[in-house]
Length: 451
Image (cartoon, rainbow, N blue to C red; front, side, top):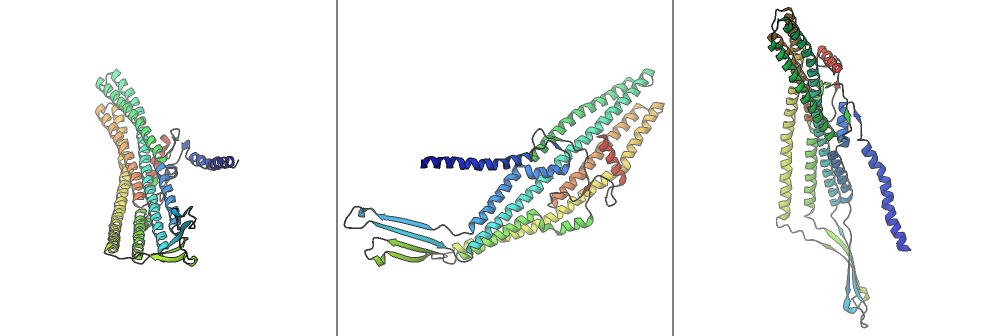
């Protein structure tokens, strides 16, 4: 009966715990089962919360924190049992046995130093977690930028397909009237077919981009992306950039080196404690002694910390590692500063290039095509001029979208170089403190509506 009760408890308790924890796992998985994503920054948050690698790092960090709670405790006491087997059954002697209980007693502050070292290791994992979050957010934004770029190029492709259909109707009409050559009709048809081929390739590229986003965010294959706001126009005030340069020590990679230095400092303090003897309290009862007063023995034992160079070598090794971390930190600070300034320069360059396309190059290409079409229809111009003008507009629109995509990509790289996960600021409407001209906003909104 007792065995049956034990068996029921041993089977029921794990089952009960499993039933209690199952809703938690289901809830955690349900949070990542999103059928529709409508915002780009939601993708970043989903990646941080749902990415399997991020979850693994989170669990390892939690494991390290549990380790901190355990290292600050005393070592387990030791119990020794010994018997004299030849005394058993011998009427001349009582049964002989020895019982010994001992407890190691570390030198003062050793336990607290061990706890500090484990805490520093936990801080290393925490900095690594945030560092990986920054890297993951940058990867998500880079893939999102490619996804939107291919969608914008596909939108341009579709508009030019319609344009070439209209042009083919004009060319065919002129060919029937005898004012255009057959080669013009064939060339117009060929250009339309090239756009059809490009559309197929772009659709496939968009599908691959979607797959990459699902991979990074750990979303199911049923999730669809319907983000129609395009690439957000980003803002970084000059005072904020100055603050980023002044806060390099707050970046996760710097925090990781700081934690490693604290860990080495604590380990060095522990090594210095090794030069002191460690004690162990002991109580022993030996029934083999004839005299009752001699059977119980209490005392302490200690090690003899003779150096012979081994402790000095360990301490010197830790000091060398401390020095290496200090130099690595100094080199990293300079590298982070210059990388941040370079990314800011790339971003400003992308802004200027995009402004040039919106303010000058695109209007010029559109006017050239309009003029070439009017001249061709009136008989003043030839098909070659019309063809060149259309090609020029198509190329200019593609490069303008590439410049916009580059602007977003460089801002994402700037955020990664600053050690940030979330965007500093983003907007898709005209704003006075935005460095983008108002005409850029209007063009961007028109392109969004077209898509």
